[in-house]
Length: 336
Image (cartoon, rainbow, N blue to C red; front, side):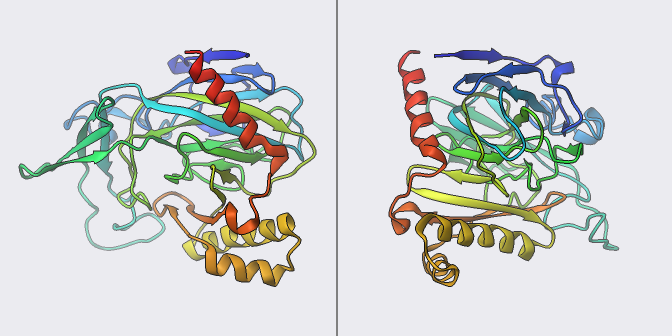
């Protein structure tokens, strides 16, 4: 088993997809052990550390990478299987921002009322109990919630030599913020440039659907990812697979367009996997599908279209990459 560990220094962190050289070259079949910093770069450590004071725009939402996958070319697909995602600290943070989030005026939704206050909430993280503790700022109310680690940001370099800020989700991936991207899930990303140049960051201890206030329970993570390359198979938008579901994503504004992109991809994907007529596939997805919300706060919004594999006869997709990478991940875990 080829295992590569990478812990970035501050100068190694990337803030764009594209426009940066690879931090390392890896072969398909590699298991990567990564440290990812939280979306504030670890600078928000208490209620008085307002992001506007301790962070500098645009140096937000850092990602670890990019990694060059040997042999990856435009028209191929990278398969990234998340073996484990574990908080690297016993604390995490969430905030409200002026002009950011789903329930406030923003630069694209201009309002005359004052912006929301900038407030920081600190969360205690208990990995052994698998909980995070919410504590209200203005009362004694608190509650424990289940730990459900995920990555908000994963992507590859965009096409046409573009460099996109890591906070923007699009066809290359990016800051999709879907809680579906947890351990045990494989994400498929279409390759746009030689090597793919994928990167990962924005760990969340948990997140509600939509990330409505603009931030999740933001945390640094120790993450293990198994990497595979699917030659000659293109992927138009990021797709996800777990043991029981296939998922398509779409990112755009307005939200209804993100919804349409994800549903269109799932319908056409289902038709190609089953040989169904497109309208038959449309009917099947309409009655059997789910539509989890990724984010409604970023520069583009993200929707997910999700369908049980059982409804499709449990097809093996992408050369059975999920099954093979899952087995590789289990082998890795059993050896530790």
